[in-house]
Image 1: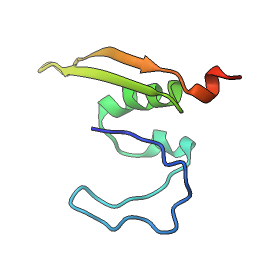
Image 2: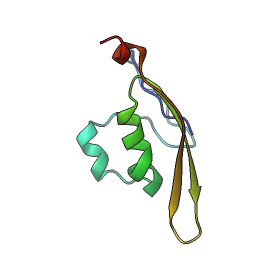
Image 3: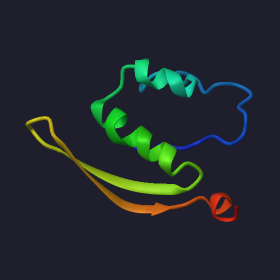
Image 4: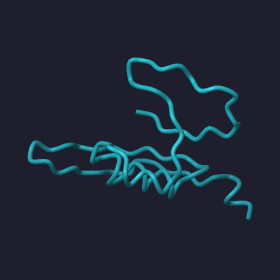
Length: 83
């Protein structure tokens, strides 16, 4: 899966596809949206921590419901480093 930030304002939304429909939500709405446990517990927190930079993470999903996360690579935003 790839999670990315769109820097330019979109003139139109991408059309619906087999994965669903594209939609924008304010950050505070994320807590109320249905999403996988993995997204809630690590992907969004990692996105906000590394926003403007890059991260690569691995999740091993165990049969008992535990998720074991490894942050494999992270790079800060060049803009954040210049401040």
